[in-house]
Length: 246
Ligand SMILES: [Zn+2]
Image 1 (spheres, rainbow, N blue to C red):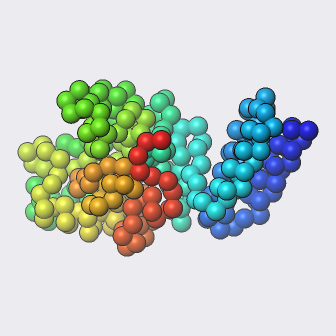
Image 2 (image 1 turned 90 degrees about the vertical axis):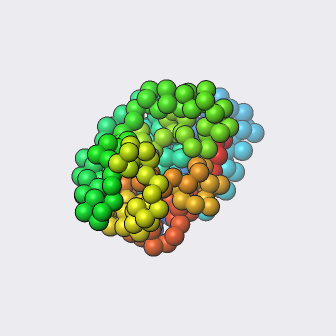
Image 3 (image 1 turned 60 degrees about the vertical axis):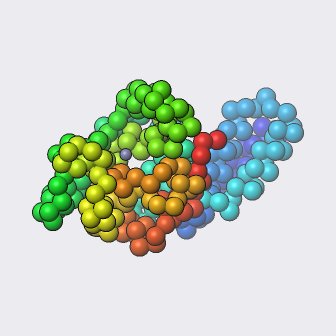
């Protein structure tokens, strides 16, 4: 009986997945499918649990929910998949793609143009970081500043955008994270032309989960321009959950 209804739900989810065209509906449907799969795994759950999960499925349909593929969460953007990492959307510990070549090429184009515009940048930067590297980095910040403070500026292991190979921290000529006002103004206005967004912007800590970081850029591709023009954070633009840890 329970199994039959689960299978039925799964079929329904798959039918609507194929039928739906719009971004929002497709995302909702994939989530529906995902939750149903979860239900399948926990078949020994009680009828009440089953009911609760079914209600959850129904209530999640109107939201844009990122899909987890076993390594990372993503949403469907205008030009393809957009990886989502924040305090509500972790990566698997074993996910270690290295630096994304397309993002890296775009980073060096941006870097060269900033230097051509007279901004003194270091050739050193912080790009891809493995789960293990992030773990030791985060631990050192917690030891220095306490966990509450560290969580405002450093990601816990598995929660760093740097683990995707799509994020870069720009550094000034002295090797410090880039904060020089003219340089970061230029960056804020032009990063999108290279496919990047400045990920953690002023006044959005409650949404992004982090204090503003003028130096941290995240590669998106062409849709970076849409996001930039919207004035929204990545979370707000795609309508996905952000803020603090669960
Ligand atoms: Zn960063």
